[in-house]
Length: 127
Image (cartoon, rainbow, N blue to C red; front, side, top):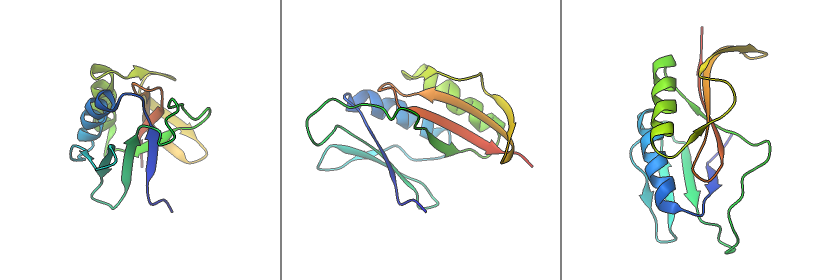
């Protein structure tokens, strides 16, 4: 359904440090910066996640109510993702990492805000 997800930042280097760390825990290679100063992360399943300074020159802002979710292979990967985020400029939000049950079944997940304030989630769907 999606070709890519892109979030904004006012500090590209802080974002690169953060996302290299958190996405690295999920098996994603470090990002690369293109000629337009956007950082791209490519997953082995074809997904693309990107970070950019706003092209209109205005300050970056976060989506109120928006969350970008990343798939994790198991609860240990979710915990590693969360810890890497905290160690690299992120802040925890929502409840601590753990099991939640909802309309889509049982999930193990954790939430963070990146250094620019974007809300993120790592999620493992449990059997």
